[in-house]
Image (cartoon, rainbow, N blue to C red):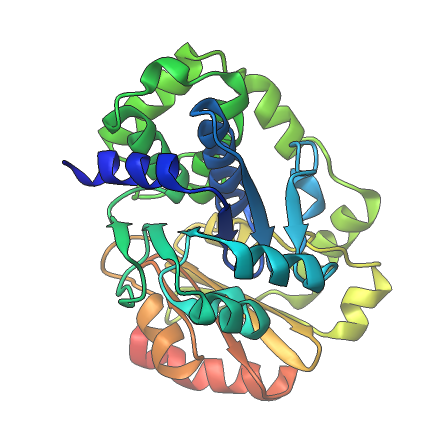
Length: 331
């Protein structure tokens, strides 16, 4: 029995299924969770999605009513996790990625755990695992699960739409090097299932608020620094600057890609202050310019070669100075 049929068998045998994903929700974690949820429902089973925190506002046109949030309803999430006899771990491969509260629940759970993920260096905490770093997204791996378990016929618009969102957002609208022929083959199956791709693009891209555009304009005009010798661009935003433009989660998404669009740039780094911690986003171009090593070695982070995250407990100014000192060693 292949891994996909084993996962199907686990779904059919379970009576209380919980789907989890990483902290700092994004399009892939939300999309893969909802796509898997609707697939499980097609198999005649029920599941509940438990996430650590709220998704960015631009994803809320999706039907997220099935997602229970640890930050808003910890009692229910705790009860769901304790009663689970099958837990899916989507878009993360280390238990710490769900945040300390959910991590404790996840590690205490003695039920079967299934990890489906596309990040490097997975921890050994799951019963079954699909770990494929060459995949564009976890959403793509959910399509593989549906197809390879023999259920492509049930793929419809309800399942396919969030999965398309996951692939679209995690590939930077299909421009990252993680996009392979297989990715487009999967997209073709989603379109054949009834997914209306042009409406998805509108929902994701044509939802800017005035404050978001003003914040991004300020960041680009006043905060952008370019290290010309290393071909690296940086934006650093303090909590006061974010507050001035009434920052909402997701408002700085896309800034790193805007920096990378500058001719000659090899890497882009954007970080913002939240609760005394600097949340750092690293992006780069090409296999010769990995950013995950810098993130892992100096900023308690990691991720893909060209897309990684990290954090710093230094001040904005100290973090910026640290980055400027390290960048010549890596670029």
